[in-house]
Amino acid sequence: MSTHLASDAGVDAVLEQVGGVVGEAFGLADRIATDVGAVFTEQPTVRRGDLGAVTTLVGPALEDPDGLIQGAGFVAAVDTLADSRWWLEWFMLSNGSAERLIVDTDPRGENFYDYGSLPWYDVPRTTGRRHITGPYVDYLCTDDYTLTFTVPVVVDDRFVGVAGADVRVFTFEKAILPCLRATHRKVAIVNDQGRVVLSNSAHHVSGTLLRAPSPSYRIEDLPLSVVELS
Figure 1 (tube, one colour):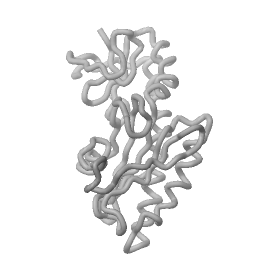
Figure 2 (cartoon, one colour; figure 1 turned 120 degrees about the vertical axis):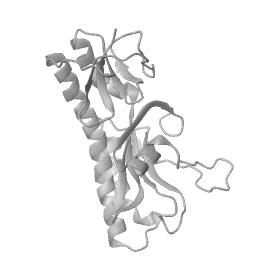
Figure 3 (cartoon, helix red, strand yellow; figure 1 turned 45 degrees about the vertical axis):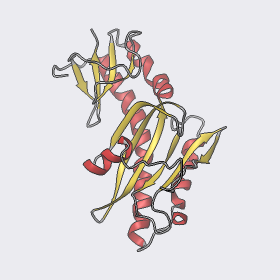
């Protein structure tokens, strides 16, 4: 996507609305990262029970009836916690309440959840930057098309895990689609892999891969662009 999409009032409204949704997700992830980082800074040895600050932050965000977050938490780097080599301190919204996500973190287990190479974990670890994964079907947590927003948690130059938040694509669409329609142009929000997150065109549904370069407008420093569709 090498050509530039000219900004106008419609595009500016889309950028503002996307910024609000993304800001809510990354804002929660940043707060989790700050509190978890403080635990690792203050304690030479950290165990699963020391991560209570995650519950304190995530519970109200998930249970907010006007909120956008479907799941959130902290995922520890391998061998970072003293009492578990692998661990997800992650919660999801279930029947209006925050519920802990239970997964098999024993490498010997038949259903062991090896998250080490998954993009929402691996990209922040290797780049040191925040990342948006998706849209993808999250069979583990939301069981729906999802966007996962993650940030690295780094303490004294040591990567200790990622903090993040999930937003359903449906929720993202509900918040953004009215602005997309109001542009009176065929446009889409596209990730860095060229995959459509959301569009106002019936021919470009979520997950569609755009193969041809199109005029685009980068959304701040995010791996997202507003793209004009042909």
